[in-house]
Image (cartoon, rainbow, N blue to C red; front, side, top):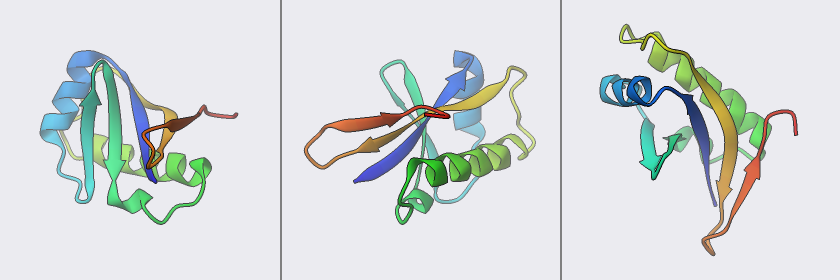
Length: 94
């Protein structure tokens, strides 16, 4: 199973952040209209709270790299992708 954290924010800011990313072991991906942080650092984590916390740290590193977009970007729902193609979505505080 794989984890990923959805990013919420302005389309151009997310695109700019993806292009400027220099954080090792992490990438910003897009699936249709949704944007995500994916990282090998998520592999050993066992629950959505841990993934959310790590995603916040990664996002903070990305934004602190000197190429921060002007509009705010935040972590949205955390997704757990299952091997059968299904997914479980974990919302903040839920």
